[in-house]
Image (cartoon, rainbow, N blue to C red; front, top):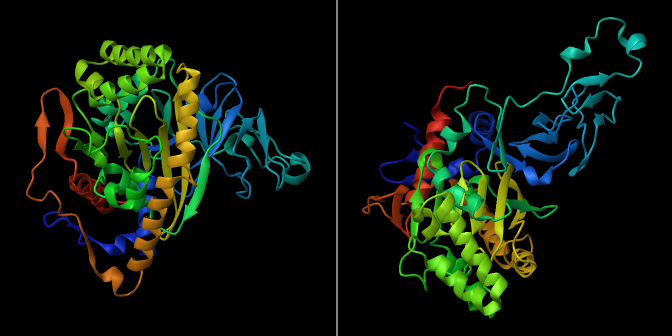
Length: 429
């Protein structure tokens, strides 16, 4: 049993957020063996298109090769380890290392070595020195995930029941999801798990951390909240995934339709078409959910989407040290949404959840001050309390995936840390 996570009493040692040795084990046991989000296919539509990202602390390139296949490579020259790509995105037929000039093709092959005959004679076989390719890469509804573990379960198994919900976001889009070009990123002095648990189930912080946002006379990022809906829920899922702010009975659709009708006929027709598309492609249970709220796919890929009139926000807390994260953020839209809705989405993302947004600043401040107050010799010797919901066993709902809890509950957080504990205790690869 992991002494750091008390599953029965629902207590978690603060040491897991501050100890470098625990962080080092996470890189091996979690980030080197889990399925991780890399990017969206809309970011690299053409052969030669690429973006860069990270898998844990390992920099990677997601690159569409000459045949159109999406590949993921360690962004590191096999000669001396230099990054072969030093830009965020673009199009390239090859990458040439700026250190010594080793050159690689879109399939990772080592194409050229400067002065190879003079420098190496016949001792260097270029076939043995291509870029290190991530062995498992899979596209799920346009979202590209990858794992360094060649023996890992399939992505479908890893996502499990989370697919039941994530498909709502994917299938509701009339023209398919596209990521707005570019992304935002910022650093925070905090542990990556604080962001992950915040998204996976922490509705409790909303009235307090973001209370000022609700008081502003602005368009709210969530048209349906705990103050306006009859009841909202959190859902715990296998493999540490979780989401919250779910409404099961058309609350989000009916609110969207009312708001869209105030905008105009095109916007109202669009909302009706989204609802009809969900019912046709999935089932009425998922169509009646319409928009997910917010959640986290273990370990560090978070999302929110409260409405078809609001942004699809996607977030990744990249670990940089036990005390450091780099937060990356993308805004998604329906490619075929009316122009008026796309513009509203762009503005709302920048105003609310972006690096300088109202909600993101609140969260970053929380994460940093938790870390500061947890890192001392006395502070880290205490435990975090996740006992909310201890006497409220999760329930099930016919035709609905997952284990359902009240809106204010910490069942999702304990689900996250129970899975974290299991992975940390498994035999090292």
